[in-house]
Length: 323
Image 1 (cartoon, rainbow, N blue to C red):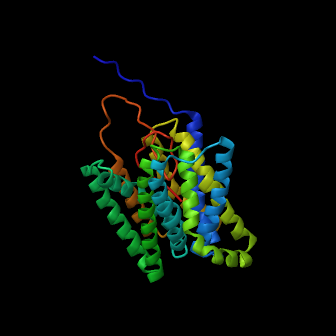
Image 2: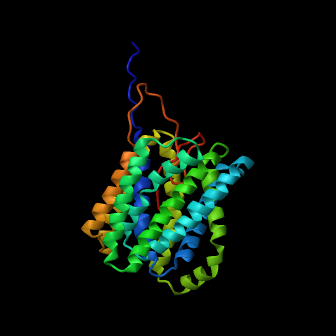
Image 3: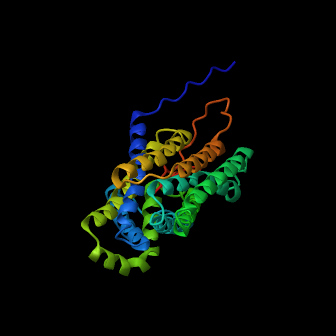
């Protein structure tokens, strides 16, 4: 008989880095809600991306990272347009219609959509648990939408925007997977951020106009989004992924909606209704079902995987997200 494999211990540094990432991603939903009172969705996305690209560019210079290989660019371009560009604009727009907690609950179905896209586009299969999880999350999203119908058509539209954000985020991460075979996490993230900023340049005039009239607190929130949830959080996520398994890291993202609800309650004095919370929990239950399954008999170390735009150089599998 083969000896039972010894479970891998979690690196304390990886756990700390993952905790920092989750906190920063949760805080992003609150900052978007706050800054969105003074900045239009496109202007806020552009300002955030410019700040993030600047910080990531400096890190690239310090680490002497060159340009990614040519084979990495298709994935970088698609992920930059979908995840950094479209995702941030529609999420900002959605959070002008619904509270931060509701947005986080809906967007967190992203890992399920990633698994679906990976099964279809990357030929990773569509297991029955994935399909069951999709059905459960669909019910949860429907409950969230119905719960917001009493708040008016604008709130329902906000839920739909958050669903679109989840799809854009998932598509961007799946497109990023092949790029990470040919470029480092820092390269792929930095240039994806730059491409997202270029795609949002049509909002430059609005950014200048909004910045002229915005209070200092809103502008600081925009800069915070670029420096911390965008640049720093991706770095800590990649650090953690390099030192633990993808499954353990993916489980940490389930804490994001709960943290967002708590933070928005304290900072913004807003809490989703109980029916909305129930629908959001059903969405998360669907994600959990889709990612559950029998454990392999032998403990083979899983390769690091990508999540929300940051990953080691090794071949990853799509993983969840953020804001």
